[in-house]
Image (tube, rainbow, N blue to C red; front, side):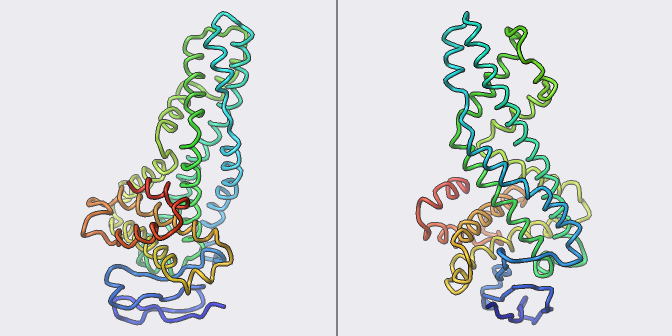
Length: 323
């Protein structure tokens, strides 16, 4: 059972009510000088009427995220078929076999890339909701926990996707073979209908996307930067404070046994770690001084310590992402 306590901010008692959901004050006022910290119910937060429209829009994207991850996890590549075709350039049967193996994989890669564009739009909708006046980012996160949870879910998906992608070198090998084969135009009377789905412009964009070590995170970083650039009347601090607050939330949840014990699933620990790392990286891209500067509102030493206190297998990829 969660008990509701008043939220303290800037040494004053702030608004508290049912809309706050399962929001708990967890730090002393001295600690709050480093940034607001509170507990968000990432497991159970439900949208209020005011959140519903944006929540529905973002949910229509997030509901496809697990199938995207499953498709990526099942990606085996066409390495053997490609090697056979390269080693036997005059064997048309092997050329056709390699081509027919690669084409459906390229369609799948296009699906992943297209999802990144949908995710970019979803993130910008959430940023707009969580940073717009008259509320501060902290007040938004207090009042709109379901949207904060979706923001966290996008980051969680993003780091899971990128962790998987880094372990599948076949993706770039397959796509490079596809592009070489198309450009040489040495395959006759084969399934070139794929060009109607993956034309040259699309192939160029996909190539740039998959060339990134962490393509989904790069997409979100660009989306956040673009959001700040396009909303010139919105103070930069609204966006960076939203990100630093999320980092503080996750850090406190991870380092406080009384709060981690409230999670119904151990997976929520890894969820919090991924979200914390994701918002740090976004903050680092958007803030002029970055996340590692002394003026940063993110307690980087504390965040890294929290990660290093976890089992090494769970955090190796996350620590590498921060590097």
